[in-house]
Length: 142
Image (cartoon, rainbow, N blue to C red; front, side, top):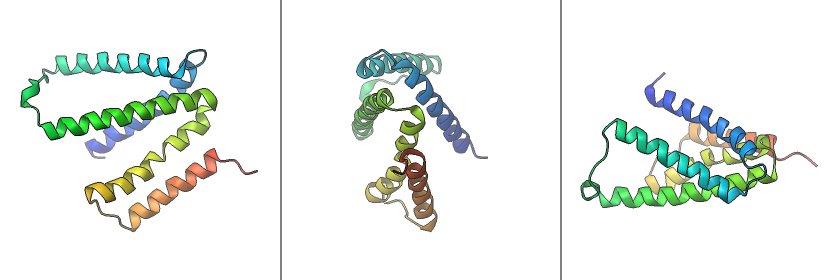
């Protein structure tokens, strides 16, 4: 297994924990406040890691294009988290988490449109299977 696959698998595992812990955490707390608390913890955790690894750089040395896209990514992440936590307040994690994984199909499509990534049979089949899996798990019949 390649290192990026291990990181991605770890990410998926912790995303699964996020759904469970998030569902437990939003019980009795406003979803927006829950998102704020989560975000503050993330900021502290990442700041500690970046400090420990000596990875701070003066802002003027960072590429404006990269920073601009990271800001947009942060906005998208924030909106995703706000909507995710609100959904967790309203429905079981076992229904919310699969719908959230439609991000896989969206990422494939957006990668093709905006990044010029290749759309081949493998990606079309895999994305379609994700969509079918979401429909099976999160949209009960009748």
